Amino acid sequence: MTTVEHLLVNSYLSWLKNSVSAKKLDDEVAELTTPFLDRHNDHLQVYAETKGPGNYLLSDDGYIFAELRSSGVESRGSKREELLNQIVSGYGITIRDSELQASATTENLGSRLHSLIQAMLSVDDLFVLSQTNVETIFSQDVARYLDTRDIRYIPSAKFSGKSGLDHMMDFVIPKSRKAPERIVQVVNTPRRDRVGNMLFAINDTRTARGAGTEYYALINDTRRTVSAGIVHAFEEYSVKAQPWSTRDEIIDELAA
Image (cartoon, rainbow, N blue to C red; front, side, top):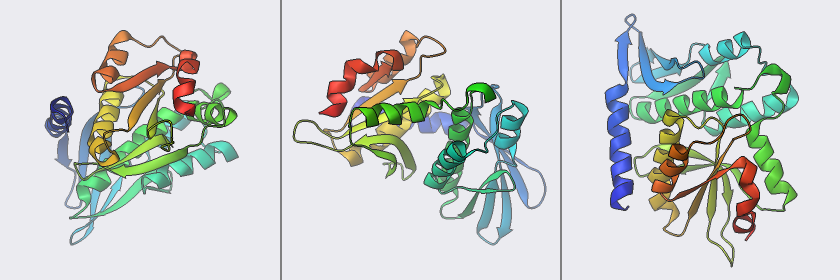
């Protein structure tokens, strides 16, 4: 791991540790407030219920789905349900009574908490669109784009990082005779906390994937222009940031 990558991982973990707060609600339930924000700029919260010695149930208490419904976004519908189930199952998360839940033990409590938070962020980001245009989900647009250009890829691949945490990569294009492995991350809402989270995941898994792996970030600019600061943040960590409107500029690199 290079010096800058090592700095990013350590800085991110330090920021996360110092930005999380916990409050005991009763003898069995604790509330954890994270530094990650939803689309209303509210901090995401997770609830941990003790189910027995060394066993816990982590939950968002139904917050994500309640917020979607209050915004007029419905998760039902064959395409939306299929994509939703793909996301949560990829993180090992279950949906029960409109709650995102994860079972954990003392040994894996941290990693399961990480997976639940990532699932909450992904679902919140996925359905950020209004009901009238919710069918145009950005990750599906990216998949269709790759399909129409006959680019082989593995969707929603999970890799373990140096930290011991698991991270979901949106699209992995296998190595070929002409090009190394390429990993494409989809950035629907390029906000500071989401970008930092994504950069941590990339650098945490970079050593395991090998020095030749190339990373791309396809950024949704259909609603707003991508700021130079966001592009610089990715490029600072050797991730090629490409606005969706100029995606054809990298098509030869992805198709190689």
